[in-house]
Length: 407
Image (tube, rainbow, N blue to C red):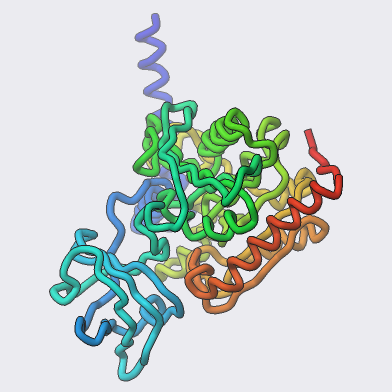
């Protein structure tokens, strides 16, 4: 009987997927558009196996400490960055732009960690900058967070002195915990410990059965585990800091977990993903696809039988992930930072969230910083904002101010 039930279930799933495919074709008028929709949807939820090297390296002058790149938005960004080349087998550090002329951008090449950049013709800029916590002027420990799927590696970096205040760092889509190393100096200066976590399907933590992103709808459980770890190791007050998709993951943890809210005193959002439908429309447009394709992709991700087309074990309701719709449930201060030229996650969602709770949200707009590169672009302002905001949380506690928690 059990086998018969399984066969019936499989047939129903196949019929449902076929019906869904027919519906997608009808929605986007054409088999080619339907294929694009499915490919787009799968790409959104599939962790990238390798990041594209789309930056052309035109020349390297090691003696002068300079590198010449083909002009483009990435090549001309202000600030300092990492540069991966030769299919990520080489790594160097870039300083600021020296000159742009004739379709070529000259930048400072401050150091080469490994590899031969003079032999490379393509690379990619990496905003993480740091290769690991050992590059920071701070002690650190490799620790393990027990998540619902198993042990996930993390870094614990203590404040300058003893502290029971922790910032739990949640990286973004296609990234790893290295992304958050840029925030450690600011958090330590403010007297807060840092826990830089990994989560399911990020290449370090255990994988889910479908090996797909939940866009915040599944990963939040791993953030709850990180908060449990912090509280068990002495954390009395916790701030979640989410980068890009990590911002959505952090907000879902806040909205869905009583345990997180019990310890939470604030949230920091860096270039956060707030409105997935808007993001899908934007990214579809950037690929030269009709903006309405984003709405169809959203419907496909949330369809009951969409897993046969997307690979998801369970549908994702993007409407249920909308934090603006649940903004009334937020009750702790939020520092929200976003660049108006993000280029990947449009700022509109952040503006709507900020407008929904001006009583709680300190909204800081940057210009020219692009996606999750605010520290690289203007480290003085970025560090200052975080340090001052965390210091205000500390001062509020010392003054005996109560933190309201919504259960």
